[in-house]
View 1: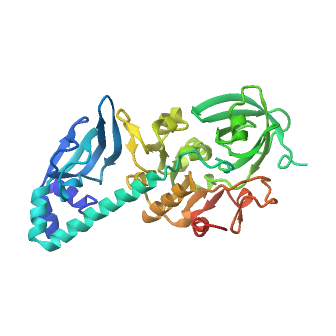
View 2: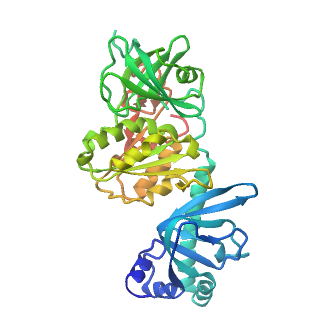
Length: 160
Length: 272
């Protein structure tokens, strides 16, 4: 990867601050992709062998329900990581993912990244810490949503 | 007796249904109007024969009329929500502190609303858009339970066209929804924020405001540049009865708008 895509890759929130040699190794497993609105990145239950660093766009994680509209679990955008299931067994997508609008991303070969992690523990530590941070932020956001903050307030509440 | 202690009679001149449980009433004075308000202040609305509740003013400060957005959660708010055109309502106020959006001229405004918390922010936003050239970026981030629970949904496109960067996220949505799904704090990570220049105005459920303020602090915004609208059980509106006490604050007088710097130590204590 050379020129502007390399800069964009190094500037992605997931990569930023990584040692240059780790960035270079990760970049070797990455390819810039642009997809139109409606492009499906993956289906629930499929083999999880890739992940994406979204740079521009809007992607919905969804669940399909027979006879009913798809349920959107969460949406992701520029700076986000799409795909966590590639990192640990059974390496199977838990949700589907579809581009809501035209989306640019770096697509990474999860198997190649795992092989790199296995062969170079310092690199693997960087990747694991960063993926753990992504998972932690998602868990935090999910916990807040579980509080159902916007539900009906208790009677006797104040001005709103 | 002032109109802070005796209700002024106002007539309902319009009634806009925002969601299944929320309406915005347009009110015009029958006799002497209450004093002009600042965005962020509230009034005590009296449903005659039922009771009185504190309600945020959701309109811009223009003329003697008021716009007040009410969610039906109890007997009084149900009676107010059901008020039709021509009905009389008692109004006391305006009470409390405002957002002081005029004092933020030359800065970026980041306005974060959760659910019906958009109502007390609407006046500040309208005032800022009215003087659009006086501000740098104006960003409005809205969190809602579902798309159907959004208040002022019909106005969002117009606010965008007038120069606000409007982004909406919901907790739950079916296919076809083209906005974000997730908590409103996640939107904070996705917008440009100049921490030194930013004044943030935040209103919504208290837990949402805590997490939002923390997320803004994580982006470098100073706690004294984050303003929250707090609520307790306002009764008198004149800082005499003590029902709205939060630690050293009487929120009907010292609030509802307070800085996060002042509010943060009070928000995680079970009893104050």
